[in-house]
Image (cartoon, rainbow, N blue to C red; front, side):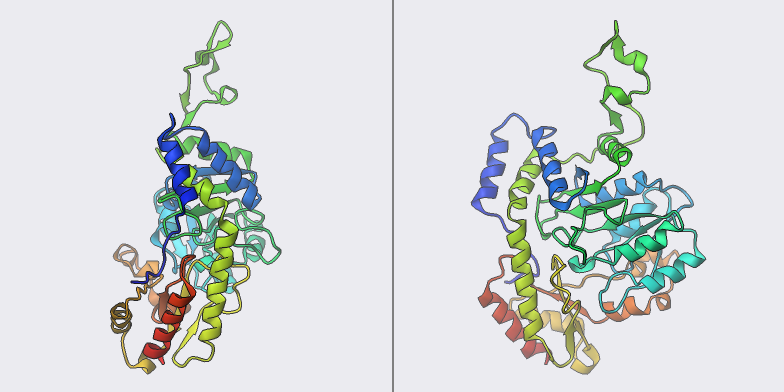
Length: 389
């Protein structure tokens, strides 16, 4: 069976994890800071805070942005639910703008229309499938209104903006979050990271990750309690705000460090596979790939075909069953967030997001991952042509 996505683990990864398992530090050890340092170096950001998942990263980014009751986050309907939920965790509100039908990222025109009618505190652009949004244009909108930007780059580790800077550099945003889930560009099993260039934001994120605790004596609020005869009490720490246990482990960071060494070849191979699909499906009847001719800056996390099921004469479920019979796993990314019962109860209207629903009703993700062989891809291509033409 060929999955739609899959992690790559080699002997170097296994050795790195085994070394930690034999060490004295399974968690809260030196590899966490080492991983964060290498992430910062790779993306070009000053600070990185590694956490338990991309969802945890979004949650902490929302808190660090000052999200609270009555404040509004604007994001895309075409994303995993975590993006939209990040404000709700903080008793905020989430609203949506429609997508651009060619990139499947947030439409700049739609953002402008929505932001005129709403007081927005945060914009969370989603780099869908690994293709970066035009965050520079979003920043131009946000700057004039005092709006904070945190990028949901869960799909986009290894991607670059058109100017060559890395997604995660926070060149056009306040924070960026990544996911290292098992099907992402690099993996730690579960895991994520937040990058930023703001020291105060970094320090807050570090506290929030660890129960709201502050261990740096320079930042203590009750300094008299931290001293004995003018010397620092070595055991002393302060809980300064309500935080969480979102600490990642040294085991995960060992794997992440090993994976990070291979990121360039991972991205290169994904790009090659995506371009080969593009060439193979050029002019194919009843379907077309999204983000065609946009592969060079993308991490190419997903490969999505949009299919005219009406002309094809079969439903998506029927087609997915046919692919499964051919031992190919396909998937749909994503059900629009506003279609879920939780959001339906909040009275979002489907007709406000025509591009999002046109995309959703036609989308099907086919296999794309580093270990997909040329032979396997040729088989997938042949089956697509057989089942969709």
